[in-house]
Length: 165
Image (cartoon, rainbow, N blue to C red):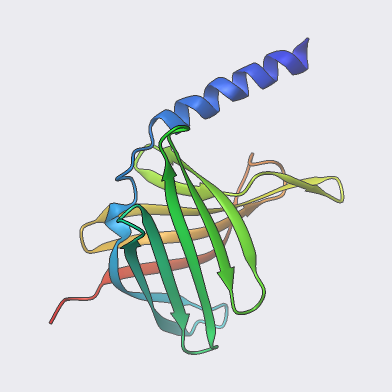
């Protein structure tokens, strides 16, 4: 009975989060961006990210580049109007692949993986977009090993819009 109640509450909670999503949720992200972050050694790295609308303007495609390491990645993000939720698939040149579901928490836009249990830990990865203005925002990559009760910051990137010439 308790499990059924918990699943019902989780379902209602997820529907509430998903209902807040819209087809224009990630329009702020479209454009050419200078991205920068500080490494664990204290060095500031600068890269680029270009996000474009494609496939009849229904899909966002990302092109991430870190010239300091040669790391490159791409994602496609799409809004599912039936479920009223965003989905993203990420792949990179190091063999990384993630499948995300979008949600909104207040002013934060989030892409989060489904929970995976490994070695008795429930692991979730997420990207959090916040402090969003027309020309800048902050992006955090976070992980949780306790099913999302607490989060650890793994990587913070400052985005600044490149000015058109």
